[in-house]
Length: 452
Ligand code: PFF
Image 1 (tube, rainbow, N blue to C red):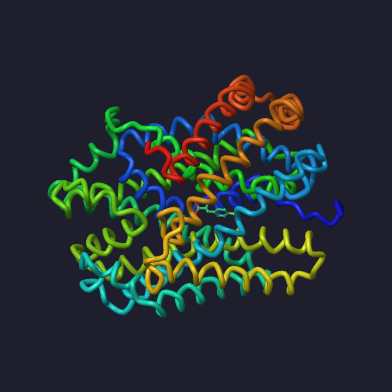
Image 2 (image 1 turned 90 degrees about the horizontal axis):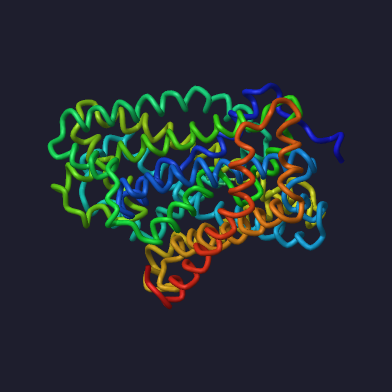
């Protein structure tokens, strides 16, 4: 088994592959709408604070666990301690739930890309366009099928490397375009600077436990943590690569892109709504409502809009591919089936859940689970429930069963682990307490027992 495990070539190979999985719709679509909704500057502050403590420590722990055991998540925990086998199963469930609805949003991206290519910019810039589009029953499902079909085809043909190569070119262009859009909005649009203040200046009166719950869920999602992905990546990582340095690079990259995406969207919301705070709370549709307006106001906006959505599509594809790869390999392992059959099984299951997520906005808009539409429910279930449970179990496992020393030794194979004190303190004490509080509060909120 072990001898068959391929490994990443070179240092950059690992960082780029992990960053390709990390940077995706989570950064460009999810982060800005959460930051807008949960108080702007205060959300950003909490997010960054969590990222350099929790995110850093958990990512180190997961990668080191993978490299140490040379196993993917579903078996890594159990191989070290039988009692923790359930964690492997739980974290494998996360990508199974995310993949379908991630692909529904990937479908929205394709629809918008196509809209800009065909010059429908002014139409898409209307306030009501996005919601009426989502209200259509069949079309969003067709775009979803196309997105997940492309993902499956790439996984089936095993041409991920090709996509990764293209996305290495696309990523810098995407970042360049985001910077350009930020500059354009700030220079030309009245009221945009108020949005910058809202985004950058923490307003402590807007702080609530929900800020932390949302920021923590986003952190897991964005950095692909608490879902076994980084354990699997770690299992492919060579011993000559410095785990601590790689984690820092991935973190800076991932948080940097999310930060810029927020800066692109939030000031524009201010400019277009005249500072109306209600516009900030739109949720999942925020990016799709705001960006077309910017492109519509810009000379050559249709072209820039089309280019932008093409790059976002690539970022989304590198993430959905790594999601599907993970799910496919879990089913291969567990059901003892071949790769092709596994892809078919995953595709079948994802089609079912994806269609349900999409219909939740149209034909089934009245059906709610715990007061949420299906897509929001899947998002909540994975990000606010499963991931904290997995993260809690992981920190308890690493902190008290395996002991931080085992991870530190793995990190220190090459060079001293600079932040090992921070790592130990976070894993053993800070993280368990905080994650527990967060978990309890999101369960209580979900069942309507308290509102935070
Ligand atoms: N981290 C990705 C994003 O922010 O878009 C989402 C994701 C990709 C999660 C791949 C999990 C995964 F395996």
